[in-house]
Image 1: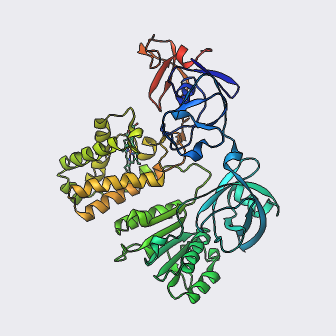
Image 2: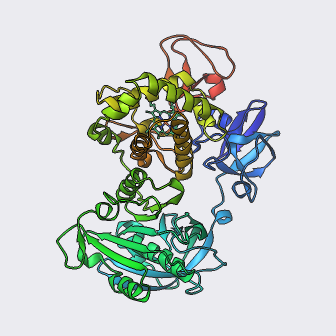
Image 3: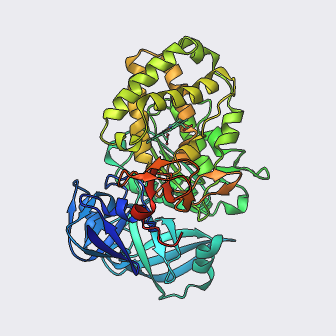
Length: 511
Ligand code: HEM
């Protein structure tokens, strides 16, 4: 047994047991998700002692004596602490603030160390009290030694930045992150840029970057706002269009009709019912709902995933799932259902997909404790109901089914690419494949996230880890010592992992 010290408490780890398993088993509050050393959620600092690492992990996650608990087994006694923010962060100083429109400001920030970034990426700004928000970069490194962000005065952090932060104020920065920036492989392709609100600042930096690199193919820049007063880059974008004949500026206002601007949804104008979009690259920055709609329209228009670059805004409040209303509003697809022979074809395709997913090094760890038959059956129930319109699915909707899984946009795309290859190999018609993948695409927002979150039941978010002590009405077997847990005895059930431990293994002393 090793002795683990963490947050003023003492825990124990059985020989070969990972730090994560040991801490969870004894009720420690520790964020975790992938269990394979890639999401970084369970990172802690090793103050004393040493660990064996079960698999190779990204070196940036273990810098400065940090360990990933899910892949670390203690070698004797260890002392642990929460991760050190200074190891991952750097300081920036607020240099200037300019009002651009009623509620929109430009802030210039000087990093104290060299920051390598591309216009369109985003950074997290972190205030002294740890309040953190991501902001997209609206300048190019060539512009100045500082970088610029556009901020809308909404929410605590942004209002503070726009109204109270002093010039000279220092804060922390993490990043840059994100792949929504100009890329050499886009040169020569028509670019379609869709921004809502202050997303326009980031995409204008991307457009200026591309033009500076000699991008000669058309760039169509759509800026969608609710009110004409929020077209805060109107003059600059019109000037850019005059300077570059291949740059086309298309303002769009969803509120009152405005001369010189399209009226309605930006996605309708930019993407829907437009022929021959498949050669384009799509860049998206703004509200998550716009990004989601644009992605779905792009999949239907056959724009390949690797040419859809998106940076949706992240809000502080946890997004409420809309999957139930999406499911309810989805029309049946009788043509696809007929092509799947009203069922047997769907089973065959799902069996082929999960056979690959369970062999896949990136996807298989998620299915730990889930049998393949179960995965096929659940997926069949969900999809068959959508295709045939029966609406008789009783399983979990996508948000709750994936609540604990850290799925990045990149991993979602990876899974979809695998799914697509299975459909193609089976010879399903291309337009049916597009419709099927566009259906998956509508649930991306419910699944992609950087950290696990609790299920939402009856509109209320449940605690992520059910660590409460329980007394079962029947006898059970402990997953730790394999001894019997008598009916009525205290035990701890970890529903996320599906494990049950007796009072001794779970360290329950006060039940
Ligand atoms: C990277 C992407 C994804 C991963 C890693 C993933 C993984 C999983 C896993 C491990 C389960 C089993 C959960 C459990 O039984 O505890 C599951 C269930 C499920 N997944 Fe996914 N999934 C992904 C994408 C999708 C997509 C795109 C859809 C369809 C829109 C989908 C629909 C479902 C459904 C309907 C269930 C069953 C829910 C239930 O238990 O009733 N998943 N997924």
